[in-house]
Length: 191
Image (tube, rainbow, N blue to C red):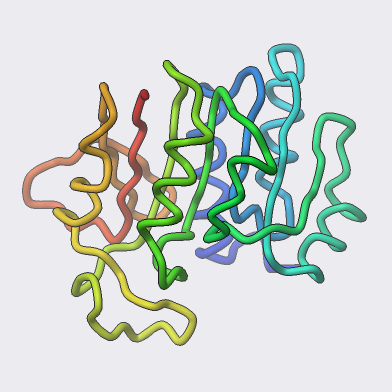
């Protein structure tokens, strides 16, 4: 229902289109919201996908997703990203995508442990977050617990065998260029 020229919508779409090239096998879209990103990936990669499990904790968003962004390869499920039993409930995945989730969570450690447990060896994690003043510091966003610094974000992925970091300004996603300000970071990591 958003205006197609809405900057926030365009930023979110850009992240999902960025993730398309990594999408194959069994995928988890953790904190999928209204499901448009899962559908983008399902349509673009249907020949190489087993399934997409699209998880969110908001029932209204999932009802909207199932009605407006149905695709036979997508299963929408209501679950909590900070539930320690999530890996036992969902199993393992070739690719895990989680965009704009970290800043909403009070228990980042459980969330990150869940992701690592659910990612198959050799699997790919694609995660983004806005940068801010740091862990435990106030933000201007009413629904954000905090916004990590770039260094805090990068440190989350030390256990992965490969780590690549990209940065986003508006719809542009690129490797970091010196002297440029980037409000969002995107990690692409291989377990």
